[in-house]
Length: 242
Length: 119
Image 1: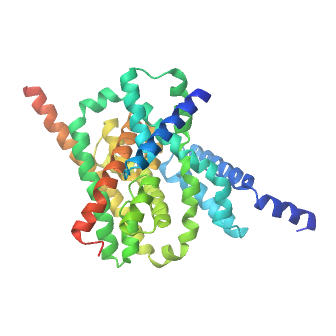
Image 2 (image 1 turned 90 degrees about the vertical axis):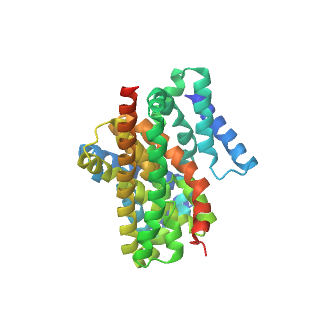
């Protein structure tokens, strides 16, 4: 690098501008690929954008902290976006009311399955206790999951990553699972996605159908609340906390 | 757009205050969502601006997860050590959750539909 270019790089790598810009660029490139693939769930835009960014940061020797100084502006919008989920929920309120019982029973069954199957399988494969506990809240939306991980003895930043991976898996796998189960009702194609894979699954559900998206959003909110309330007590009762 | 965004932030703020004040385990934005939902039910309608701003925001919901996801680079070491356990746990548990939730809903719906018919 010429001294001048080097100087520009030193300046840019210290401002939030670069982290923010590459996040938007990486996502738009990933979304373009996703659209070109005919919205194939395997071409999940979060997965592609994250892979691209990690490779870029490692190649340029940039730390995650430096990157996040810029990317935090995007991250911050998760808050208002979560609040905005109230609107699709409201437009589907009639349908939700009619399905109150299946929604609540499905939520409870799904929520418990999500947490305890993750712990049990990780234990079976000999994962360490902090890893097991970091996995427990994996189906819950990132900010809640990190809070739960902290309370039960997991590693919050590892949980954040596992949450995203879970979201991508559910967004990718949902279609195949529901088709195999011959489920066509957009509500039942949406709700389990929200229980199993929170906002990323919800984002995918919205791309497929407004009604699926609304039910996924409802499931995400309910499962976040239920897991946060229930999991710490259940774990300490079952003795997993030691 | 501006007033809609302000509304969303106000509800998030109220949610955060509630969460901390009552030391609830649920994060502020989720409480904000529930409060906004309650407000809409009381109001009986969604104004156009709020609807279109929310739609714009939710259309690119995936983007908002990218910064946190990139945090995987902090854990490459642990992931490399325990990748088999992590992979199987995530894969099997996520699919199991989808199946169990969908199945339970389908069963409940079948039953309530039948009892609804007979009633």
